[in-house]
Image 1 (cartoon, rainbow, N blue to C red):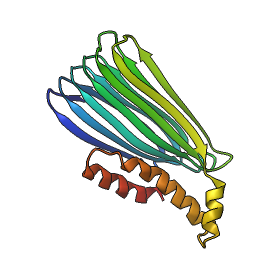
Image 2 (image 1 turned 120 degrees about the horizontal axis):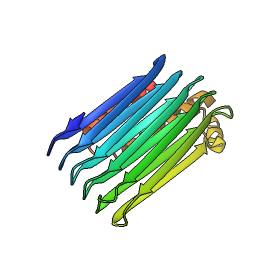
Image 3 (image 1 turned 180 degrees about the horizontal axis):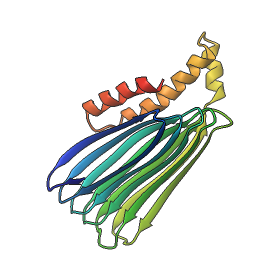
Length: 212
């Protein structure tokens, strides 16, 4: 879909435990348009999802902030792209993923900045938490920058649940299962703090109830 000049959209996209799912979300931003893109994904089967923002106009803004819970035998491929064409555009991708059970997940993020996209600012952050030895997750942050008049950052991190934290909580009467759920819930809730408005925070909190 296309956002016309000066348009603003908050787009919430949820996929919860679908049997087999392909999804393609592609938005074009014209001059001064803004989009906040919020994907919520809980997968236990097969998911192939692409979320793409085209900064076709000038002074556009796009934030893509989402979370993924892969569990059971899920097979997930996720593609996240901010493509900057116009001048003075801003983009941000922040994605938190959780890998449980025997799930396999691949997250491919891209900041693509064209030669004429001067004064661009764009950021990409991918974070993943693995809860079992059998789960596998790959995060791939990519940059394609064709001019020098930009500000760009990208990062990726993958970690495991801290067993010392589990031991601390169980020593104070919390069951191991509940301790792990508290850690996973807190990992996702840390994303809520940086959301741009209260309504988005409420929606994120509501969807977390579907996760745990």
